[in-house]
Image (cartoon, rainbow, N blue to C red; front, side, top):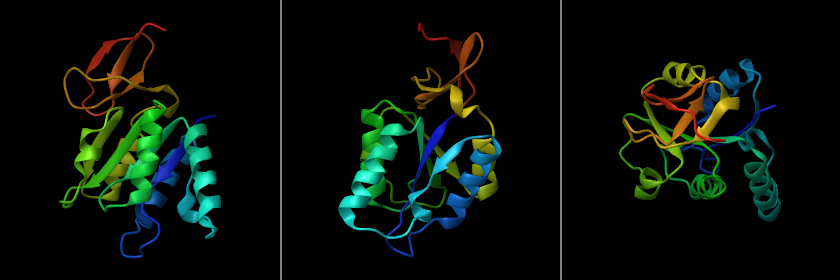
Amino acid sequence: MVLVYLSAPIIHDTLRKDDFCSTVIGAMEDNGVTVFAPQLLAAREPNLIYRRDVEHVRMCDLLIAEVSSPSLGVGMEIMLAIGLMKPVLMFLQSNSERVSKMVLGAEGKVLFRYESLKEVDQVLRSFDAENLIVQKCTACDSQVAEVLEDKTRCIACGHTGRNPVV
């Protein structure tokens, strides 16, 4: 069973991305993927939230993050996933201008720009989450690929390459 950690701003009501979160949960669960979404959980003590969320990032197979609005918590979750070599799929609204250079320069991630939630849904349904790995694409800036039977496919541009040696 594949586990996705969903990272998005929670604290500030004006920055929340609840429709984005619902779209991600729907697309992933339709494909048999379990999503841990702290946005849907009741408020708790900060130390409990920290321990719970760190544990779930450690357990997840990949992390999906909405990065259109600055969020310290989202940044921490992304850094933890990158440090653990988990594939990180970042989504940025195309009209967003405020993206951290740390986020843009991060390794082990792919960045998707989107205008509508339909685009997010289409991206998430275009790959098998069970087969994602961290692997730099030679044709674009993506560092997430899907392992196919005899090759890998970049989930950003579709470029295919040889399977990594296992």
